[in-house]
Image 1 (cartoon, rainbow, N blue to C red):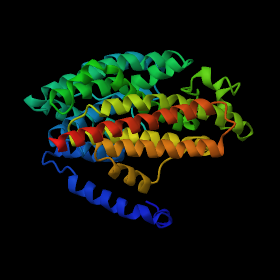
Image 2 (cartoon, rainbow, N blue to C red):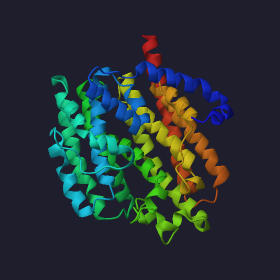
Image 3 (cartoon, rainbow, N blue to C red):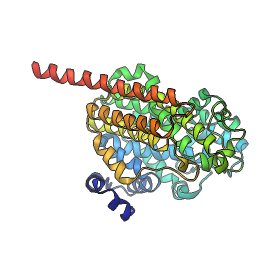
Length: 390
């Protein structure tokens, strides 16, 4: 954490301290050395995900930690550019057949994931030790790996051309996970069974998160050899002749128009995400679901018309993250946070990019989000008033 950054934003000091205390108090300290190792590795590869897992009911924390690491192995295999595509495809398709094999580890690994892959059999041990009560979780994880492995191969073979392709790509990385977790939440009576009939809502939750990763990582992706093009050609070709030009200073105006266009597309997932979270009953599961989606909207706002997207990765300050994290307490509080971010982004649009080609659509979607939040607040306040009157 940068000390100077904290001093420049004194209003974030208390939320940061509150987050540190919360993380310490909720830290998992399993007696089982394998399980303890899984939590330590999870902290190293995804500290932010650990914080939201810690909000879950205790009965879900270990299964979802193991679930994440199993899928992290699959995702590492998908992204390992050192493995030729023709070899990666069968490996991805067959991944789910090996997750119960104590001797197997994914044939890949790079960067911060090396330790996870080298000691992957320890993850398998925990996967196999899930209690009888968690057998349903084991089935969900296996099903997720089968679906994800098959869907991940699609865009190893072809480019993202249309917005519908981007929807599919974003869903591929997160959708099966969202659907299976939803089944787990409903099975444990932590969420409304209506969610089982609305897989589209789980899909929107997944697509919003997936698109944020695509949008933020554009510099890294176009610098790959060969480049990875996850921005839809139907969007970037309106502004650029070659997607690789998006990071060149001489094309900054065109690049920003392209960026704002794809961010505007991502905004259409926000309202369905709110509908999903209205159907979550348990406070911990609610926070687990709501915090990443709120962070996603805040990241959209931070990235909008921001040239830093093309020179690095735009990240929120830890203090900003802490304030948003702590703001997620109830559905009314979430409505207020979403509406505040949408309002701030609308102000930013009007001030910085009134001539942007996507301006009218951006404003319309932000106003729709604010209207949905206002309606949701009225509805929840009405329920509170009704209960009070009785």
